[in-house]
Image (tube, rainbow, N blue to C red; front, side):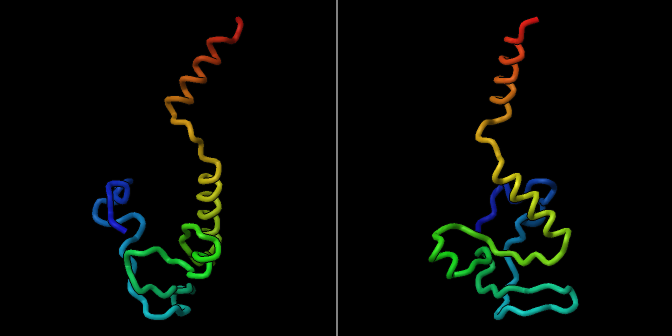
Length: 106
């Protein structure tokens, strides 16, 4: 990962909003204090991944362990926004809407 302008949107001037670089962790473990699974990370600039998924599915992925209701809700919204995103830009949508409204008979 190399930080770009998109990494510092929404007031994240002093840190990457994608939380890069990740903390280096030699082995995965369960953290009882935070009640979370900490995944092994050997390179802080690479997304969390599974080598089997990478080889067999041949696609990009970023593994996250979601144990809380809040995290699951955030993931659900992210996924639904991602799969339903429009290819049209907002100005294109507004232009089409304007044309449609102009054609409505009075």
